[in-house]
Length: 447
Image (cartoon, rainbow, N blue to C red; front, side):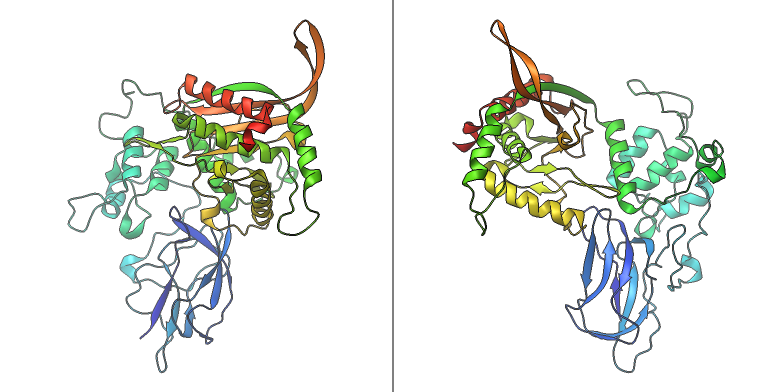
């Protein structure tokens, strides 16, 4: 019996991905555990293994195809004497993103998707409602998040076309409709609801932007999945998360001396060798500060506040075209040398885009350190679902007042961005005060 190979969900939040490369060919025999393809998610390229054995009857999706939705058939395995044609039970055709190579998957006429349009257009109620309705016409298929976003934007779900399985409306459908001016709910088109902010002005369309520049003066670099994800998540963060920021100057002279002594005492090689950076101290100090101020180690959800039991610290790592935020889990329980070696391994694999989703998804807070670029101070955007992020500047010698005299000290400016829905000003101040005390007296991190 022919077996479909489906687009796998490589993380809990994955809705679609790019089929970057096939590692098998039609007619090739495969067995369970063989690596058959490379899939690009929003940030990583991961290998996919076969879960069954058989002969590759047909590759349904071409290499390089973007926007392949989870659970879409991408290939067919057949047994001896079977046809290479796709099984008639194929649930959904493999979609192609704009500009992607066409796939070989053919769907029945009734299920054929609409031809892609060059510009997003607001769907009409007459054409979109059937896609959003359940088969009995009594219920609109939509995820809880999509329903909430549509309610907040005043959009009529019945007027939206769903791109999820079986026409289910998902978050991206609501966001697209909001940007393109889809039909609002009856009676809400020109009315601002009490207690809500006015709708943001429309974003300039691509055609309007390109019209401002001579065609010979630029080149267009298409967005990859990572850049699209960064844009979506941080735009959502700025639009929905009420940020406030707190800053302190930390004196790090004692930290630098302790770091120098510890590195000098490190074994030259072997599994116990280490080389501590200032960032390793920052990770440890923030983890211990969260343990001391558990009210700040939280995440906002509509149902209630998540109070985390551990300090899982995400650390921004810049790579070409974007960034990763690999996570040091249970950082409050780890030694400085353990944090240093783990962070070095994660950063190296992040730059090669070889992190697994569980290594960069989740976490309870994050750190963005631009000190190595000479940046004195900056404000960082909170990375949802975190409630805080610490922006770390460079350590530099400055004049400070000690008693009635002026002295020279090495200071590092740190700015904490907080989600005011769940971290109030006093709680944020307590967290930053605890962090400053640990950074300025690093011996406290060892007890």
